[in-house]
Image (cartoon, rainbow, N blue to C red):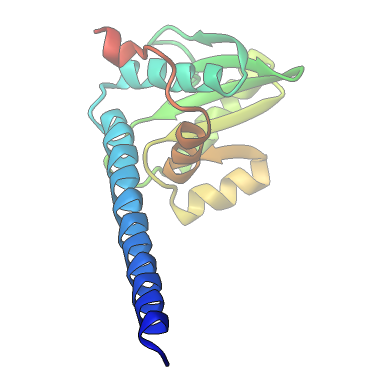
Length: 165
């Protein structure tokens, strides 16, 4: 192999190594930014979390998004509509897994408000009994991974309630 071929090969290897390091750095900073954004929801109080979820639903194209009053809401925190389908959503900002009670309350609240679909939205994940009940009762479960995807897909609304306070 000639000296010029070795020089070209060394430059190519160097460029590939540089691109690999650059890709790793970009991925690291994007992940940190996403984690910082999502972790904000873990610091919100219950009602502020509900407004955060409402803003996120609006960003997803839901209309007529209404946060219900705090007490006497039959377990439903948000009423909304998308593509002609009406939703009753319960929001749970927890520090651990969400259990079956949230699913059962959502099922009852969905019926009370006469909504077509019930959903539980959380910054955490669901227990196995909650998942089983949701499948049987046809309640949607929007866990942290789903919320992360919603945030990633649409970004946060320009000003969430948490940022206004």
